[in-house]
Image (tube, rainbow, N blue to C red; front, top):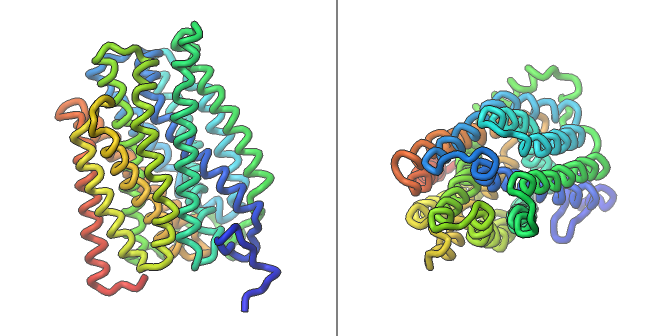
Length: 431
């Protein structure tokens, strides 16, 4: 029989011992803002290239690839130490500081007038991205009991979809609205990112006041950071299901780059080629982007419930199959006026949310509690590698081969990881 003193619920979700409703609600708010801010910066980068830097259309794919690659080099170096640090001092201070760092980055971004300046802003911003990205997954793994993990991940995915939709549908249209009122394009971008910075400051306060204090790791306070990192790596090496979860992380973040950067850039460039201004183009790209996120938002809780009722490796295999088909189909359509754009956007959204929810659920199930932050730091390295891969290779293919090439590339990677999951199932790996 469960101890009624230590168990709390958030609706149908059973929370882990020591976690209350305020902790869970604070996390869900932070999760929605985390994904919203990451979606916003990906979505608005093409606008900055057009409005602030006037980068030629045929060079924007490579420019976006260089920005993404530079971002992730920093994240790659920092995310594992940040995860181990969270095991040592707790999730709350790391998450709050990460949001404050993002706020400073949003303030700096619109000040850039050359590409090297924009890249410097991106490098600074990526420090905050490493912190909030690692804590997004780690706190999610801490908060629910195991029997409610899939549902909690699904609810979090729903909130993340709301955050991304708000960021793109509301904040993403602010530049056009301000330009329609007579503001120049550069000032409109500065005002938009100023609003994002204020929201990050608010979220840092929510994290500091609402997240659980302390660390769930029994060894975190005593062990030095290098030892925690080694322990996390040892746990991963001993468990192939953790490696499968890390591969899910790799491709789920690559998926996010394809939707957030190349889907957005392709839609905006197609609109500009038809004679629209930069502000009108970003507004035209908003509808398909929001449809993609909304479809994932609707499906997130359903898929989370499925994950609590089936072998989670099997769920990961299904997720990779859906995502693979979604991105391969998405490679064929890039005009916001095309009649197929809506079903394509829906399939892309389903593929993205399946990959994200499966990766977080499998990793949360398999990562040992004492070194969970370190294991999620390792998964964060895989996520950074996924972003590097999608940004660098996808950006080059986008400019040199075809604007649908990044979609085909990531779709093929999803299918390859699905095959690895099938291999684990054939080995009868326990879930």
